[in-house]
Image 1 (cartoon, each protein chain N blue to C red):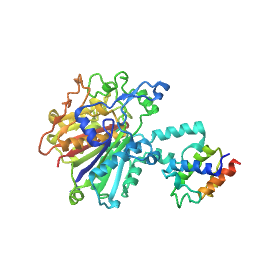
Image 2 (image 1 turned 135 degrees about the vertical axis):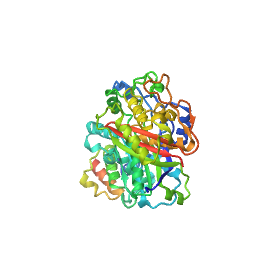
Image 3 (image 1 turned 30 degrees about the horizontal axis):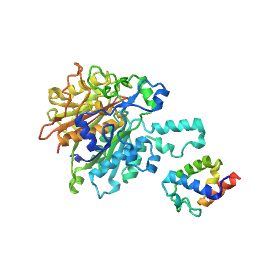
Image 4 (image 1 turned 30 degrees about the vertical axis):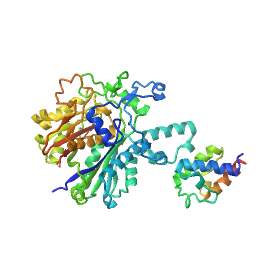
Length: 411
Length: 81
């Protein structure tokens, strides 16, 4: 029998809160983290999108100036969230050779990369900072977290676009089950609110253009949804072998019961319209966690608010959960904080764990006219979840046809 | 043309910016690696910032000879002369 893995620490820095308690309070209330960007580059480059959901708290509230200087903003968010998760877990004694990191990013150090390119062109090669490479590398967040916590059982970086954060949790479960580590700090970080990625995502028609009303732009499942809203931040979880957590008398939030990753092999960006890859991922995560459809009471959906993306996820949920889907409280939390890309799955994993622990489903805002082709029971005001043994699922899908699902069970 | 004291003060600011060390800790007889715990990547950043601040060029092959703060101050002073 596989080792049981539990979640004992949570951390987050997001557009709706710089730590888990603040984020969770807001997630239950229903707030928007999206605002008009004040940066001069919006007008300078005539960007078609004028808003995004920035992290509510700067990383320098936690990091020293010198620490922050040596980290790309994505790595800064990763360290902020993982420090919170680590402190929350309250681990005082640890065999550092048995502590691993699985920290994802979708894009990596895009600010560092493009700043260095500007510096090279404007000032020449001598002025390109010596820290450029370690700051831009996609494994930068994982490496920084490993260094910060003294994690020596490996520092891993799964990269699967917007499924990255969820895939990191999946990898964390595997690392503990396979006996390679007893404790894993996993998560995802992203800091891509930069003119180039905004231009690129806008160019592929993925972003909402509701420039006159940013707070209402991210509207998953609404008939008038027109694209996602860029967000930034990080989420982190401390996963622990159950026996390790019990031995130290840890507070246990929930069990990470099962996870899975599949690939569509259908199209580089478009989701399989029938959601077949997502269906396989959902079924595999439930099988992995020995979860029956009737155990599932809550889903934190991927639901980015794009016209084409939200429907196949419904098809997949229907195929995996059948008639139980009518009794599942579905939350689309990107309505509040936008799409944190490679961090989204990690932050949503934190929200899903909190939903199980607190027995409350967070709010989906901006749902005014629900798309009749997506007849889900969407949570629009915070809702109590049932007592007894319950389970929840969190989905993430990424460009490249990546599907990742985690299943969380109450303890 | 900056005096040695001015160069030291300017260098101390650069070191503080890069490492967070107090400017008073940056003294002429201090070794960058042994006393100030500055690694090679930070050292290169400090060198490049010093080049800009003092309008000099510090060749890469010269950097390994700059063992103490005093070595750097002397090099910058002679390069400015």
